[in-house]
Length: 259
Image (tube, rainbow, N blue to C red):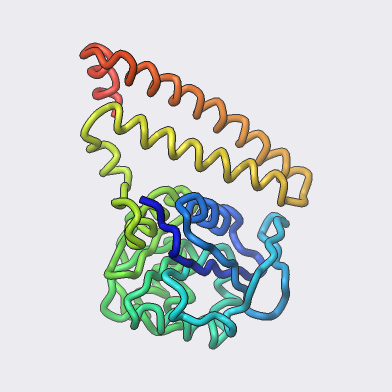
């Protein structure tokens, strides 16, 4: 199902984690969501921890929460800046009060704590800020993604696929597919279809990163990752094509055991 008509705001500030910002941006845009990147108003361009720039299209004080369906807060050290701006905290509080999606990953839990929205909720985050979360009144658990009402939290970049699945699910597009759901796929064909989509999303992210990052070493890293994901995508796509064209029991059994 297309999410055309939905709008999300992704926050940015200096020292943001590039994976935790660009992966959700590309996943949501790929699903038809209109995504705007909002800063604090301190600059028009912010730089990630490895020097990857992002240009914002608006600032938190200009965002009208009534026109937004989701707020996404990436991690890195940007949350330590974001939490200092009343406009950012106000948007988080208003979004949750109005039943809109708020998604925070890694150190972004700092913003939730400063907004005062954690008391009585079950959440996760990077383990380094577990105490901050519990001191703010939350119950902290160690899971790749936790959804408490419309509040979605994850721990680290490795959780991004499940994190974005949960966001898309909350926006009404697809059912959240964490790793446990993937392993319970109804068929090998369905599991491979999910794998093709995941590999395609990763390939698009790394390819876009090559064009945006300034640091030559980082550019080489992203180019290498894009090449590897392209190889993975071809392997999975070829197997998906063979399985759908010749869904014999022997082939099905092999993949059923794998997944």
